[in-house]
Image (cartoon, rainbow, N blue to C red; front, side, top):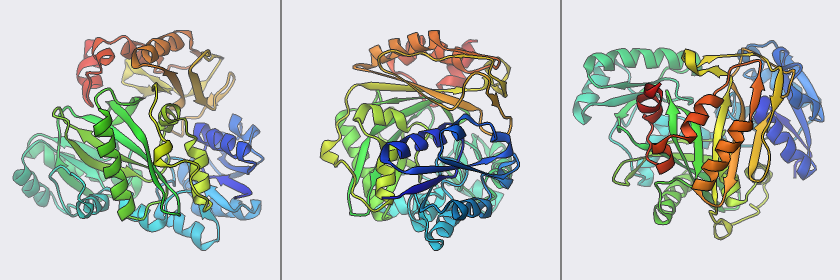
Length: 449
C-alpha cells in the first residue's frame, strides 16, 4: 500500500481524499494556488505546498509544478480527484515515467475512453448500444451538415475532450448547426485546448443514468448500481439520486453488465463511470465514460455501503478490491444536491465572497461533503460548487422528506446559493413522482418562475 499520496486538486474532493488517506494510515500532501492559501482542507493535510498563482493554468493544471512538489514531498502516488488533470492521459504518463502511481486508469484507457469520439468507437467495437452519429471527428461545417442530413435533426455537437457540459450545442436546423459547430469548437479550444468535435443524434427529453464502475488489476470488475442525474441546467448536474426511479432491477443489471463489457474491452482499472441516455421506452444508449471519480460518487457509496475512494486507492496500489459483484446490493435511497455559490435569480451568476455565517443540517441520514466554514472566502477563480448535501433513507419518499428538512435548516450567509432552487425541486410534483428528464429544470421548473 502507498505510504504518501499527493492530491492534485482542491476544495471538497481534496478533503474527501485526505479523510480516506487518514483512515488507511496514508500521509496526504496537498498542493495549492495562492488563491487557496487559506483553504480549510490544508489544515488537515499532513503537508502542503504552494504551486503557483490563482489561474489554474499556472497552478492546478501545471504538470511540471505538481511533479516538482511530488518530488520534494517524496510521494509514491498522486490522486487527481475530478476536473483539472484527472482525465489527462499525458499527466498519467508523466506520473508513470516518474515512478509515481497515478490513482486512475492507465494512460491508454484514458486516451480511449476519456475522449468521447474514441469512446464511441470503442463502444461500437464492444457492441454497446449507441445513438446514430459520427464514427470519426467532424473536421468541417459541410461534413457536419452532411451527417445531420443523414441521421436527421435534432443533432448535438459535442467536444471530444473534457466534460461538464462545455463544448456542447443542440441544433434543430442547418443554421443552428453551423453556428453550434463553430461555438462548440471555440468553447472546447478554450476549455480543453482541443477543439475537436463530433456529431450524434439528439435524444429529446431523455433521462441521464450512469453506472459506477470500479476494477482492480486482478481482473475483478464491479458495478455499484446506477445514479440518475437527469436534473440538469445547461448540461450541468444539479441533483443526483440512487437508485434511479425509472430503472428496474433487471435494467440495472443489463446496464451494469454493458458498462463492464466496455471497461473490460479497454482494460480499464480503478474507478470510472459509464453514462447513458434512457428514452421513454426504456432503451438505453451509451454516451460517454468519465475516467475518474465523479462529484456524485457519494450517492452510490450510501446505497451500496462502499467506500469508493478507498477502493480506488487500493486498486491503484495493486491490491484486490475489498468487495465483489456478489457483495454489492442496492438498498435504500440517496439524494445529493450540489450547493453552488450562484445567484439563481440572476441567471445563476457566480457569487464568490466571504461566508459570514454557516449552519449545517444534521441528524440521521445526513451527509455534508464540503470544505467551507464560517469566515472562509470563496475565490472567484474556480468552480462555484461549495459542497454536496446528501440524505439517505429507506425509501425515495422518505429521502425527499429528509432532504426538505435538511434544506430548511441550512444557513449559508454572505453569499447567494442554490439552496432556494433545491427547496423548490424537492416540493415539485413531477420530481416527487420521478417524472423528469434532462430538460425539465430549464423548460419547466425555471419557466414557472
